[in-house]
Length: 345
Image (cartoon, rainbow, N blue to C red):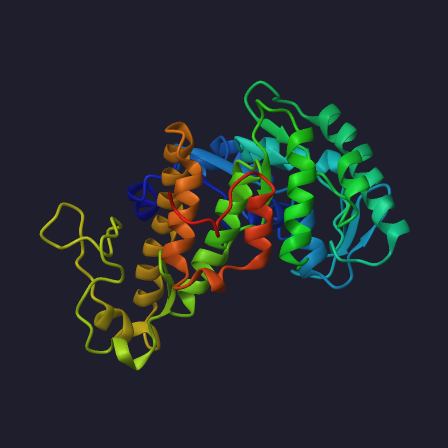
C-alpha cells in the first residue's frame, strides 16, 4: 500500500479489489461478517483513498469451467470445496455494499465479445439491463457508493447502442458508445491497458480504464516506456547502468540522491529479473507510474487544448517511423479529427 500511495494514485482496481467480491462469495474469505465488523475494505486494508470493485461475475465465468448463467444469477461450484453456489444481482450488490467500495459494478451476463451467437449476445445484453434494475433496487448506499452499469452487446454496434476483438472493432464500439453515455458521468472502459489503447480511447471519449497488464508484464521482466516495452531480461542490459527509463519520475528511476529515489539501474533489474521477485516489484512501480503519468499528461493536454499535439508526440516517441503506426489507431484518430500522418506545421 505504501508503494501505491507514493505513486500518487487515489484509486485501486487491481486483483485485490475485483477478486475481493469473488473471494467473499466463493471462498468466504475474509468473510462478509468480518468486513462488516471492521467497517469495510478501506479499514481492512488501511486504504484511505478510492476503491473500485467488480461484481465478481466476470471472475466466476472466466475462471470457473462449470459456471452457468440463468435469469436468477450465476451458478457455479466453489473452487474451495466444490459446494454449489449462486451469485445473484442482489447478492453481488450486498457484498459490494459490505466491502464499501466507492465505485461498484453491476452484475452482468458476461459473454466473449467475439461470440458468433447473435441470439445469445442479445440475450446477454437484455439480461444485463434487467439485472441492472435488480442491482439498483438492492443498492443500500447510493449516496456514498457509485453503481456503474455495464453495456453489453459484443461487436454488434446496434446492440451496443441499445444497451480479444480486433482493435478496429474495439475502436468502433467505443466510438459508438461514448457519445450516447451521459457527458457528465465517467465513461469507464474495462480491461484496457496498452498505452496506445489508452490514449486512443481517451480521444474517442473514454475517461476511466483498468487492466492487470502493467503489473503482469512486470512479472515477466518487461518495462513500459515511452519508446515501447523493454525486456529487461535481455543480456544487453547486464552492463547498462542507466535508469530503467531516462527522465522517468518513478521511485525506481529517480536518482538515490533525490528524495524518495532508489536509483535502480537496468543492470540491477537484469541481474534479478530471472532470479528474484524484487525485479518484478521494481518494474511494477515503474510501469504503474508510467501509466498514471501518461494519463496525467493526457488530461493536462486536454485542459490546455493541445491534445492533438500530445497524440502526435506520443506516437512519434513510440514508433521510429510513421510507416509503423498501427492502421487501427491512425483510422480511429482520423475519425475524431486528428491526422497522425500529417506533416507538422
